[in-house]
Length: 73
Image 1: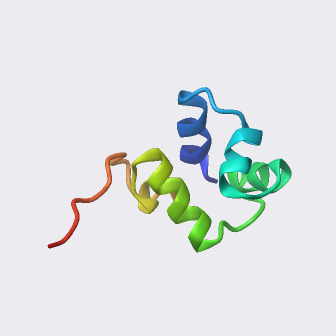
Image 2 (image 1 turned 180 degrees about the horizontal axis):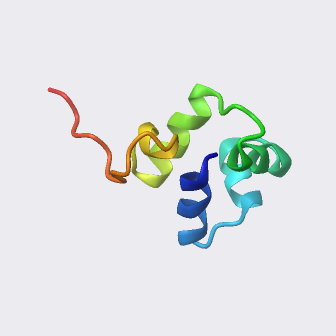
């Protein structure tokens, strides 16, 4: 379900354990996020988007545009 989350992590050669530490969750919980077996809390989704410099829409598979949207002024 959340293939983009896994792909971004793997592209940076980051282990699930390392991502889980960054997000302050267990490796099992993070693995379930990637597999779509557990809903991603909003704050975790925002943290992932900031870490990977992308949009939450990309992480959720709602767009193919990896770059984040321009900030509104």
